[in-house]
Amino acid sequence: MRAGGQIDTKYEEGSGNVFADLWLDDADELYARAQLGFHIHKLVSDRELKAREIESLPAIKQPEVSHRMSGRFSRFTTDNLLDFLKRLDQTVSIRIRPRRPGEPYQEVGYGM
Image (cartoon, rainbow, N blue to C red; front, side, top):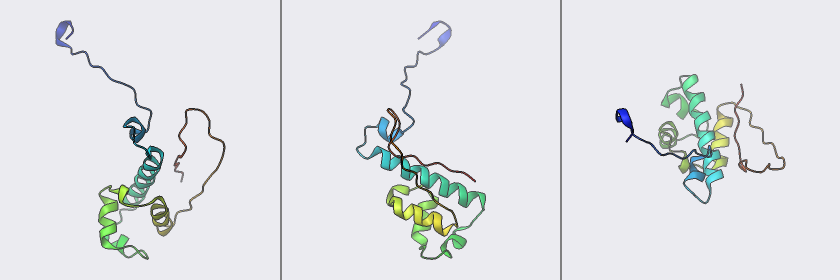
């Protein structure tokens, strides 16, 4: 403890990928799915879509809506999340290029 009652706090700066920081084997995949899920949630929120409206999208079942809206994206494959973006009338582009040292193998970007 420092003078004045301040507590010394030790911390370590993260990599930007919490899954890699936790040393999970498939950290890049989990991070990519989390990013896709975040963008899906943002689209749904921005459009103020209700669960019933999402259910009316082709091939979307009610339990899937609940899982997506509560942020449980680990239940879905990357392909499933990309398909959901298609059903939300989004264009998805995949870019392949050499990886630079220190950067993740998979990234998800979002543009409007």
